[in-house]
Length: 168
Ligand SMILES: *[C@@H]1O[C@H](CO)[C@@H](O)[C@H](O)[C@H]1NC(C)=O
Ligand SMILES: *[C@@H]1O[C@H](CO)[C@@H](O)[C@H](O)[C@H]1NC(C)=O
Image (tube, rainbow, N blue to C red):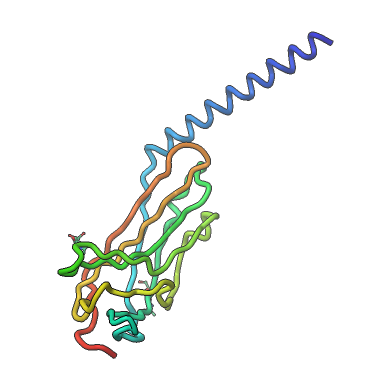
């Protein structure tokens, strides 16, 4: 009986040690992991561009989002939080950053994204009336939540977008 308890205990200790080592290994291999993410985004249409009731510029855009983030996944990845941000500079704010689309991805095969037309999910409103003819960056960000270890983040900035000179 004593022997049995003793053996159970040492077996559990052994299993726990193995788990700890696996977690450390997972974190280390994740640390050296580099993804080869592919991201392509287009503004396919400006659906509406106007001054909101509060007196600020507001844009309603349609995006074409293509991304292959499957390489971000490792055996230690629990899920990805992915979001697309519109970024621009105005005389009032050096950095304006508005999230326009996001998604939680739990499986590697779902990290191949092809959305030919999505409208901004959150309002794209300026703090003022500075958006006409404004240059934009579109940055895709991804945060990989690990099963163990630290969060891995990545991003890809695409430049060369511009809002129209006139409201519509
Ligand atoms: C847009 O991206 C370019 C290149 O990464 C960067 O130099 C510039 O500061 C960015 N502009 C804004 C407003 O974030
Ligand atoms: C969306 O982007 C993909 C890849 O860049 C392209 O093949 C496709 O034709 C685009 N679709 C639209 C509606 O612009």
